[in-house]
Length: 305
Image (cartoon, rainbow, N blue to C red):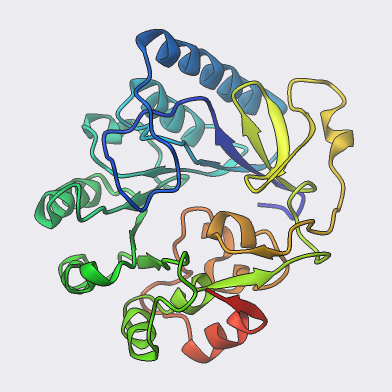
């Protein structure tokens, strides 16, 4: 992918989810058939736009709910994975979907950002889904929220996943003093990048690709810098949209989410993930395991919690 490639995060109106995690910050609803049909129409329009723009892009679907239980998103992932100017297309999923569609994807481009939710599905059931991904040759990472009551299960998941599958841990940041030093070390042994996620990074006025070569898109085509700044910068379906993109320093005090701070020049996670930042797979994992000293340097300057 070239330096001028667009990084696009798409989030349509879909909000239904088959899980009900207490720590999830998103309000879940149950969409009606009419709402699902409307979401599918908007998704199809977005997919057609991506196919027609003929410029290098990287894509990540970040739905409010669980998308891969719906055929429209399975087809979108497959279609875009066969689109030559799409460098990578990935989607966030709890993996609680049927997997017959896996063979329709080009896994040199497609990838899955999967998350295991211990309160919602047994570990062995989730691992069985991962085995299906392995058989299909799918590229994927696995994640889990680092709740203290789940530490033992997280350790067991790391032991039972194939070594080449990266297990990332999302820090629970609602309580700035949630983790002890020993607990941070424990989670860092599992995920070397955990210290970066365990910080809210100072961002106000700092350089960020969001709004320039990276942006989010909603179901109406409205584009915003990122999921955490609500101002609309333009609409992708308008012919003048490319002119709306420009370098912009960040306007928020801190940034604490992977899909936000990956666009900043610091913490510099392209050193760790390269072109696999959206799918959250470190370069060369596990043979090039991120250096804890390097990660510590990347985490400096963050706001604890």
